[in-house]
Image 1 (tube, rainbow, N blue to C red):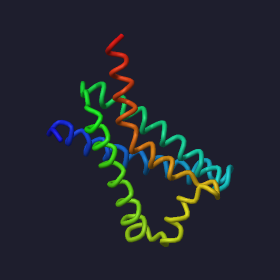
Image 2: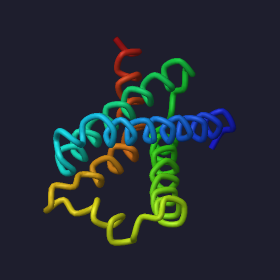
Image 3: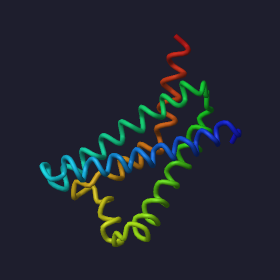
Image 4: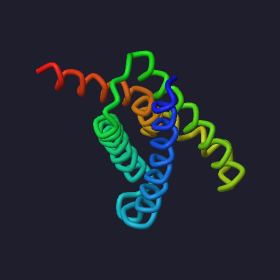
Length: 138
């Protein structure tokens, strides 16, 4: 991976981390009391999916990065692994969440859509890169 792409990958993930924390605080303090846990989780997940897509597109566009497909998937894989590691390590050891609660967010049958957030984090660089390439061709 080229140095510029590696720096952008790391820096963007740190921005994702900040946005995820802000998103969680907003969910817990503003709309979870009105919507309940499940609907608040779903809304928060959709909001974060959109934030990731928008930020990925903006970073690639502003940074004038044209990624090969392998670079886009490497970026997405890096973000995915960093997110999962942070979620479980910080979620359990820093924030004190039990393992059961952390794994519960992966249960699609119960309406928990965190897995879709992770899928989006993985494919966002590929999607944003494809959109940028298609706009450049026209």
